Length: 102
Image 1 (cartoon, rainbow, N blue to C red):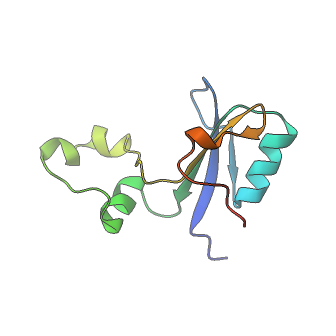
Image 2: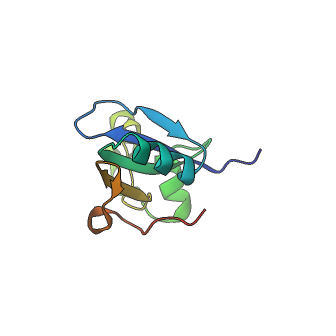
């Protein structure tokens, strides 16, 4: 299996992620069936979001704070694809990209 990304769901007002999926379709189906509200974000596998953003050219280290453990450990990228759902329905006006067809 050559899985390059996974999809994590975090419910609105939740502290932690509640589900991880290997495909967008599985995640979307689960969210729809359970009328969930929250955020679905695609994460790269076997690489931190921090390192992924640097590799892709989305982020550049500019000062010492950018290489601190606290910064690296809490880093998320605006370039990660994300989808907002409300009561199981996709909210395109708040999402970074349109629904995937895969």
